[in-house]
Image 1 (cartoon, rainbow, N blue to C red):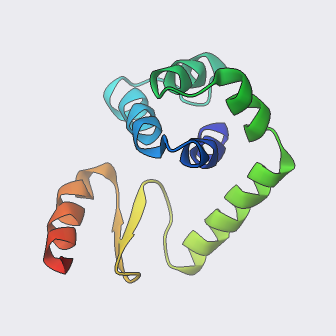
Image 2 (cartoon, rainbow, N blue to C red):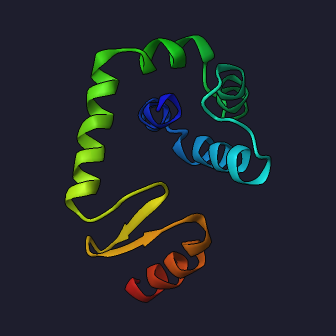
Length: 110
């Protein structure tokens, strides 16, 4: 949950892509437990974020509320996990193994 609230912090800092890449690589490639603060600290540092600011913000109620609202929206749209991506508001893709399909679909929309 902390790692997911961190997406909002990374997005605000303009570092969402490096942060997400580090999160997914840590979990999927390296098999790390991304719920652990030491792992999160490494991810945050690698993404170029300030660790003190990051941990302060992810513990604030506003960030918890944003994640809850985001999760409720995902469920309302038929989603059920991470990563779930939408293209053109209706085409839903779930799982890191679907990223090539997302890329293909995005090229079709250009």
